[in-house]
Image (cartoon, rainbow, N blue to C red; front, side):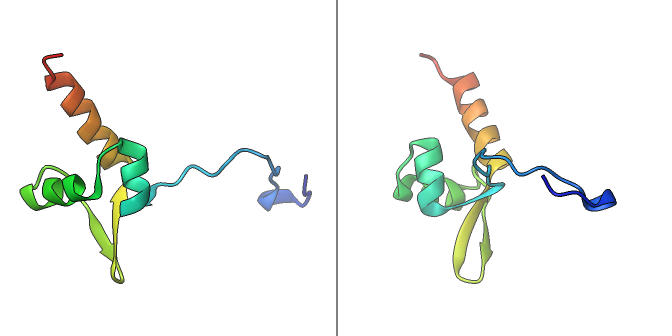
Length: 75
């Protein structure tokens, strides 16, 4: 633990939870393939953005998409 007033914090061994994912990470997170992610972006069903040349997905957008898909699923 670091001491020192206002900026005091404690180090933990917990993994960092990203707020944004690369295409590869979004595939791992959702279980969808790269092609399907790009199709969803092109159709306007999933939001993404670019940082430099890298396409990124916000965690909350991926979660919202998956929740909506699960809510409308017939199975």
